[in-house]
Length: 186
Image (tube, rainbow, N blue to C red):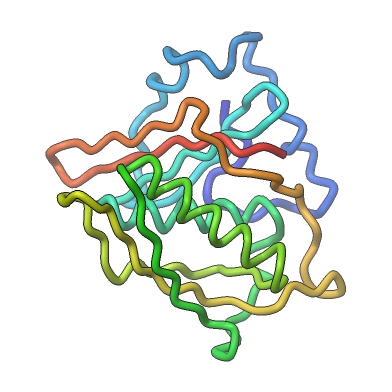
């Protein structure tokens, strides 16, 4: 039930936000979440149908890449990524600590949502500089590159109200493939 996969939407009234007809009313089931096929691109993201919310599926050749793609998906849902330029003055480094991997992921995404909500900055590039997942404290350091949001330049997509733990899943396979599922409240 793909809404968009790492591609730009046509305009701010894109009907794909409204969901697609999957022939099933149980689009957030565990079975459907696990049945998505492995993508052909080495990294990216996709939006999946979910009752009253949206689920982001990201993937990468590493856990760090999959984390990066979750945040790119966040901003891609709010505006067209291709319309975002990089203003070096808006580049930010974020350092986040969490109690476990899911907590770290939620706080990481929430920090970028907070930056958007308070400073009105949208990011098109996220680069994880450090990721520690093998200690008593989980930690991520990442750099975001983008610019101030401007309605004259950036078409407005959907507002994201919150990141949730609901059905959050991080899956890493032995052959350098990681995918992450996160539901956000819209």
